[in-house]
Length: 257
Image 1 (cartoon, rainbow, N blue to C red):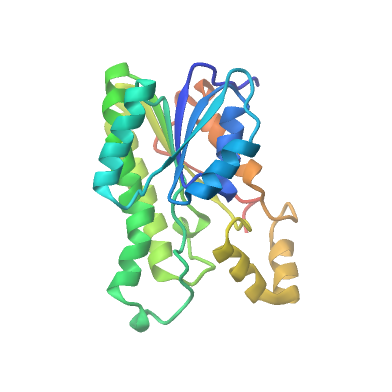
Image 2: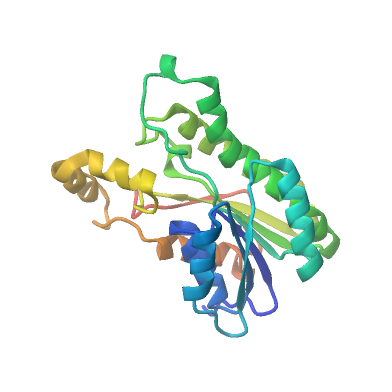
């Protein structure tokens, strides 16, 4: 299977590290012009300097706050003015926003909103911003990075995160139904646990050596995932090989557990 994206333009949110970075590298190495966006501009610049683009691919970096409707509107318009519109959107921005497990009665409304804003509202805002050009072209691919937490319970123990990731999958399915007549595919990836950010490194450390071994032993493939594992699934869903797949979630977790 030969998957390449020459002549295609891709928008990736949450691109500065971990899964987002792996996705940017995957597209750029296969010929895409990738707009890598995040609020961590210094890390984006380092990504651009170190990532190897091939087959005519390129990486552009932009600061973009997916929780800010005005920033999304002006930022996406500016990028579209340069590139003419996006062929692919990958929404990676999300996570637990530095939060840790606590009893539900101690969770504040602001803590709840912080997680929902980046995971669900952010996915909605960015998709709504890019879809007009996709409709005009009668084609497009949208891939959301959800989580295994959206399919069951969250190992983080964070109620808002589990709920937001499930909500993100509901949004994905509804958009898949709505946008299918326009030739736009909308799907999601549900990764298993990856050590891809300071938040998840703290979670990993909290398990201790015995808990870490137990987690790995619970995974049929007997290893944790890497960003490239998620990127490869995204590349497939963004390719023409997935042209009759929409409204679906693909778990990428090393097997059922």
